[in-house]
Image (cartoon, rainbow, N blue to C red; front, side, top):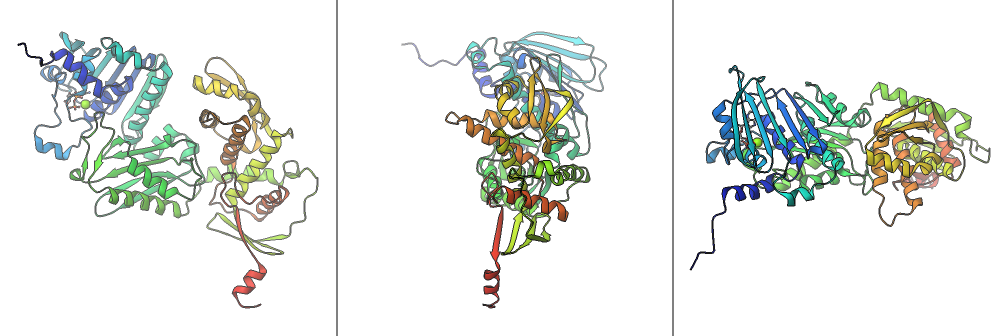
Amino acid sequence: METKIRVLPAEVAGKIAAGEVIERPASVVKELVENSLDAGSRIITVEVEEGGKRRIAVMDDGEGMIKADALRAIERHATSKVYAEEDLNAIRSLGFRGEALPSIAAVSRLSLITRTHDELSGTQVRVEGGQVKAVEEIGSPPGTRVEVTDLFYNLPARQKFLRGVRSELAHIIEVITRMALAHSSVGFGLKHNTRVLFNLPPTQDEHSRIRAILGKEVVSQLVRVQGSTGYGEVRGWATVPTYCRGSSKGIYLYVSGRSIRDKLIFHAISEAYRGFIPARMYPVVILFLSVPFSEVDVNCHPAKMEVRFRRGEEIHRLISDSLKGALSHPQEVRSDEISEIREEMASYSAPASLAPDTGMIPTPLWRMVGQLKGTYLVVERDEGVMIVDQHAAHERILYERLKRSLQGKKASQQPFLIPQPIEVKREEKELLIEYRTELSAVGLALEEFGERTVTVTSIPSFLQGEDLPSLLEALSEELAERGKGDTIEHVLDRICVFLACRGAVKANRRLQEEEVRALLREWEAFAQPATCPHGRPLFVQWSWRELEGWFRRR
Ligand code: ADP
Ligand code: MG
């Protein structure tokens, strides 16, 4: 009888293995850029066409390969990073399995051009569906260039599962963002079709790299995080609790320079922020964790996106303690930001933005006693003492103003002399235009302008000076979160909450007495709401009676 079990032909086995490592164009980009980083490159340039489905090219100025290595690189389990079993316990490089290049080559047409710094000419190897088609000597600059065309051309099942250009490109941007955040000293370029999406020069200043990627608004809210136990170390950045986002996409985690996802660390982060930010809102956090090689297994996920810690609870404690520590220390607000807040506060004293509808402003019955931790206002009133969270109060007031403008009352808005064209993603543009009427009711007027551009003609005045591209991006993220059951009122409410959060005075700034008075007066005019729009309490108070009771004066 014939045997029923056969060894798969190499080509088929190759395709199966490739499917595990290479899921989509972004996986190719990730593997190739990791190789460039491992090769000690200073500048890495990525070019993609049609979301990477048509072409992906990664160029670097790293150490390159001699001809024999170039040929070996595309063989299975061929690597220069791990030579023996014990090396697996101390992996310093991003790659180590020797699987990326052969996997990519098995499911695409691949060209590898490479030259070491000592050689005068380079080598080009061309592979199609895993078969070497040509090996030639070729003139090239030192470094390596890998070009991958027609990904999955011989794997139609996989090709069918690829998403649209935008979505595949979004994954690629995500991959590059993650790597660029962790490697400031390496320059990164990303071009899609003819458009340059990233042009990040090498820098020694991590903070400026983060700003170049995440924008100045986020960066101004970051505090440093630092912590260590005998076991491991963590350092990085985290936003103050007054800043929050509707999605967890701003959480970037690295273990020994490798970008990972990890439920445990995620949980430790939410724990540190619990009670500070509302449910379903998230901070922006960038954390670099280093633990001894022997304590972490990086070899438990095909795309190396997950790791396993030997002592999970200890990592958990380290992360959440370090974050709590960072968040509880008052942070210095930078001077450029202060002047922006000043301008906003100045509008408080302007009667137009202040006067409640009745035209009646109650005479202030308070006296500002002081400010605690740059965040809480201590106020003496006729009936007792009150401590107010200034950010929450400001946020609430902006929120109330916006809600009123929705009821047809005119919002105080800042028209632009020249409408501001802002480039956005196509799906963002669609959302913004869809909610155009609602947005204009709260003072944010915009117009469609070409495929990926909107022009903003006015914004609520308290958002004056905001970075418009990042505002629109965050806003569409908020709109995109609209759940199935959400009514339009619900969405509008979310827009108001979001804009108020963006516009509110940040904690940790010393307010002038007039500013406090204006703030409290307006709060009173809005019938003294007790919570911020996210539901956190806005003040605590004690009556004189209570106070006197404590001192047994009654
Ligand atoms: P791994 O990175 O796991 O070693 P790869 O298949 O990604 O496996 O790469 C195989 C080998 O090819 C690497 O070990 C490295 O020696 C070499 N290589 C790949 N890309 C580059 C590059 N951009 N520059 C220099 N060498 C490279
Ligand atoms: Mg590799």
